[in-house]
Length: 96
Image (tube, rainbow, N blue to C red; front, side, top):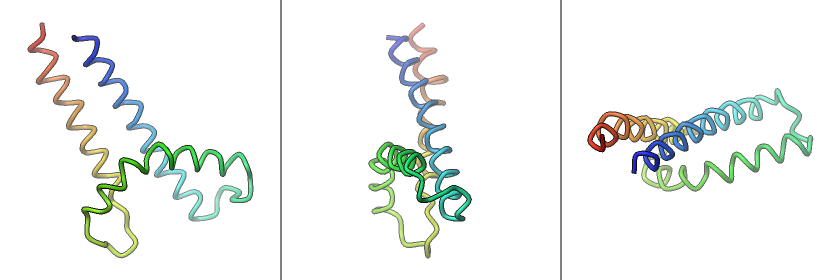
């Protein structure tokens, strides 16, 4: 059972870095720092979008319109941090 929660913890850790990479990529794309016409760049963007958008969409539907500012990645990161803390301090110690 401990291995299951540790695996979930590490999956959340990987997803946290995917969210950060997606945010950085969106800034680079929006400010035209990366070549928007490159097939490689577009494939990276599509992959990051496919991994993050299913989690962002319900949060975006819940949040009010903030005038073009998207805070859904921040909220998802807070949820990931909470789940990681819950696993480390609440669940795993009780299993030992």
